[in-house]
Length: 352
Figure (cartoon, helix red, strand yellow):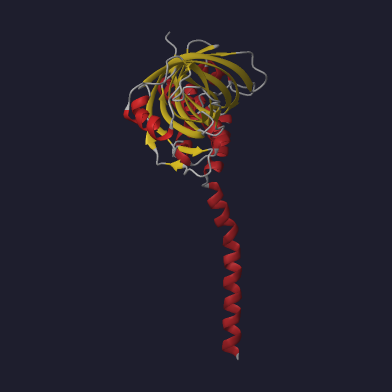
């Protein structure tokens, strides 16, 4: 019984010893954390012991700080190098600071030594890279209506509102208001024509086009309202036809005793021009975010060249099997998109 009592006493004593060590262990871990090192480095700096600051912060600069701590650590490190007259290290640290925080604006609480060095650097946007995603709503304008029938019938056209559009755009600042834009985009366009053939039947023709659009444009930024900036766009460029397909055309006779005719998809590439030229006019608004923008935009793309090429095999098939002939037409579109722009900066020291 005595042995059992002694064992229990030893166990309680061990618990008490461990409890005594735990606060010390926790304090040791906190003292070794990057947040604590930053506090201690600030304390040494305030006491004038600036030589103690860099060894305490350099390791944590890699990944030990959150954003607010990183800002404070960079400023403290730069000031320490300046006070020690280590100007090259101060410059290189300021350059690293601006690469991570290119849109930083000095505040009234910044030390005068930091502000002075900051003013000796310049941060320029090198390029804006934008991604756009949205839809095209095509609309056709006609040059020369054509028909197989000797007497033209009704021939209404309709278009789909949802057609995939996506693009990548590089933007270069010409000045604070103007930007030069080079863009590469993928665009789908689809339309339907229902043609009355002399009152004895109707042909339904559905065409889908895929295009590569390569416009060059200029955007003009109007007056900003807080974080919002409206802008206008004007440009032009080529549109390369990647493919054009007639989706299962049908001919349905009015006489119910006759059989309707529905075929398979027909490749229309031979009956469409390889490259169109279009002009572009648009407007949008952008919302400033950290190192970029969110945009919403609407554009009108107006085709210049006649889309129809006469005499191809697909045209003959449609003529004889579906009593259908292509009109001469321009293809245009109303483009609606949202996008995101990332700004890439290049900081550098001003020339003395």
